[in-house]
Length: 457
Image (cartoon, rainbow, N blue to C red; front, side, top):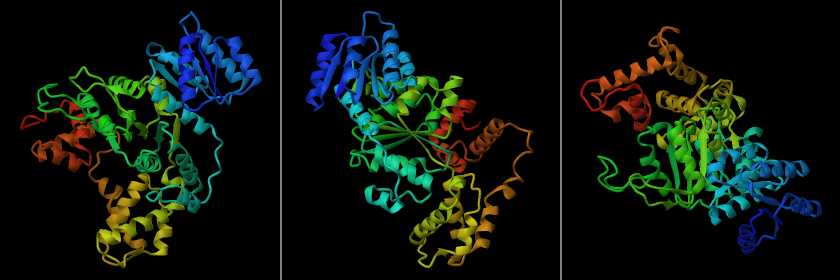
């Protein structure tokens, strides 16, 4: 049974008809007293609570009722209904234990989606089983490992994948956040629809709207044709917003609007378009700290993190390092046409002892570099040791300035300037040589005020 709490009989009736049509048993209440009469007699599966359910529009009575409901039974999920202008109030409600919030005027499809998602997630979780059992239930072919921490994560994403719950994936760089996002999509009902990846750290603030929402012809000087944005590309599928912690505050506001209302306007157009997407975000930054510092919007944070998945660093699951190493080597057999290629048991054991600050990405690079440079088919400890040293601190230390002699920002600026001079301002070549995307380079050029239109920098 679902309980709708709103003093407006018309809204209450409208919601009851909508939810009954969707197969739910529904009851309504127009006051706190009526709400608790129902709660004493029955336990609803979910409560839809309008924060301004009285003549007063401050939301205080709604917040007080939320607190009373949670004190009565903390396990009952509550969805708050509020106006766009009182989203701050809804965020306070999320802190008080609300599961989600929708803004007026709500979209029926989105409201039903949110209700079904929360009801699904309220079901008791089963303890993660063996890796074999998980692989029988879900498609996790590209995620390698058997560590208990990883199995718990796989069980969680297996459960949330069929819902449309927004997922926030956190963890250090190189821990496999993109692979987890892809696994969520492949195990969802949207798997035959697009999976669109967006690296927000590589998009400058001036290009943000055009990249994500598209533009129409004539929107700006170089807009010679209409261009579809990433959200529209992901319609009915999944959009993966990587490095969301890199967004500036102005872009965060624009993103929140789309996530909340599921509508957007292409740059240069006044016509709204509706989009149906599942949103998965990732970051290696601490968003809670950023919220406290005022560099990340609290309302956006609560909008994207209904489910949070924290990926462990590879050094936290060292027993998976040999499994990953063998997996990478096996893939490289085909790529480099070396069917006899394998890693010795001693080397696998040695690899498992490495700290690997760069996580899975560093391990993959080490294995591939060793495969390319070692002439023998059986890779041993010596082969990896030579290439580990070749690719890291010993050689790099000769070129890196003394600690304290230069800031990281100054070093980044100097390297970009040198690369621009070396490649005659050819942005694609500069980006490739620095190991970043063109959009990431544009962002840095803009940040440091480095011209890329002229021949000299």
